[in-house]
Image (cartoon, rainbow, N blue to C red; front, side, top):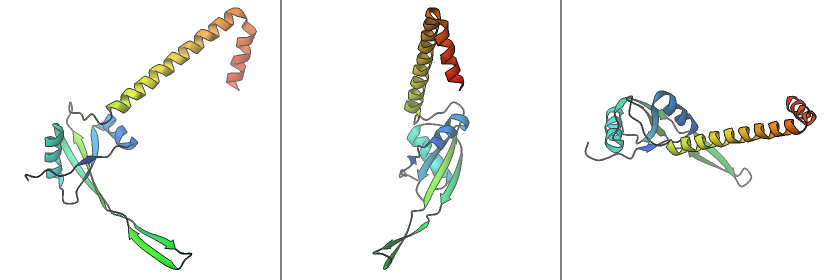
Length: 142
């Protein structure tokens, strides 16, 4: 197939966890795509080695809306979605979630700094007067 298919990554928390644990990334693919075409296109577009591809088709649900106080019922249907779960070879990685991971690391580091500063304040308070520190610990236990 000479034309490129539009393949879009799905970015969600579930996909982020899958990418961390199992090297699985999820893409929205056209309804006409099959496993071989998806693997070929991902290899072309992202320059990674594909281990396996699983395809899921989620049928669109029918929806109903009542307008004008029950006089008119509008019926519609959500679109059908085709998703491809792509497992990458060891050593291959896509950088969709790097920015999120960097933000998580920064939050973790700043949290550690805050905890360290609180411990230092507690130690200074303990040096000045021990009874205030005991009250603070009792309040934390409750």
